[in-house]
Length: 204
Image 1: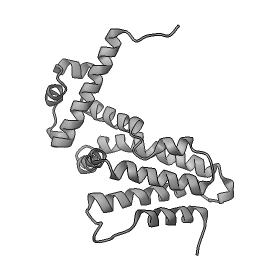
Image 2 (image 1 turned 60 degrees about the horizontal axis):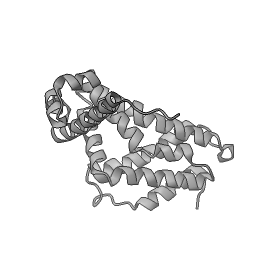
Image 3 (image 1 turned 180 degrees about the horizontal axis):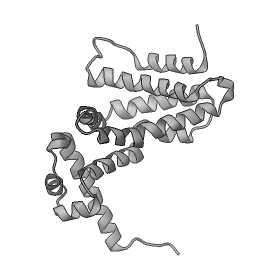
Image 4 (image 1 turned 120 degrees about the horizontal axis):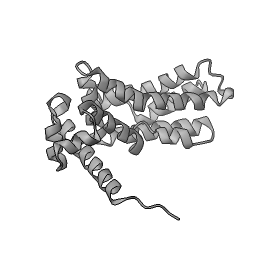
């Protein structure tokens, strides 16, 4: 017999979603420091007590947003690298293409990353939450994938993973956040193809 969710649980989930949606708007519009739980409650259309009942404090709320982003939007294309099987040349190219498309075509993600970087000096825990929930599992998943292919003969799969992902992140920061597209232009496919060749040990 299929279990159904209780009305109270469904209502709680709806309120949590409303709070997260309202928090995202407030954080992106005003930054972390200027966003208060009162503003989040008003944006979500709930009471301040309801916000606190779902999320302990502002840091917990921001962390929940990052976790939601990691799960739903798969910012760095983690789901693909965990589920795809096949030749490394195909998997790595799909992973890199998906990661760049996920981030560079979504203004909300770009703005959130800008916010995290901009606030990291005053609020290092925000940056650490991003690293813990998005960067770390992505690097670990790619490292495990590379290690599972001994024919690649990589002396250190983790360093190879960090190099691969790091180059993609740098590309996003340089092209989108630092507005360097006209100063240091680089076609996306050229970058991806070169990175894949680097991992596979190819040279012309």
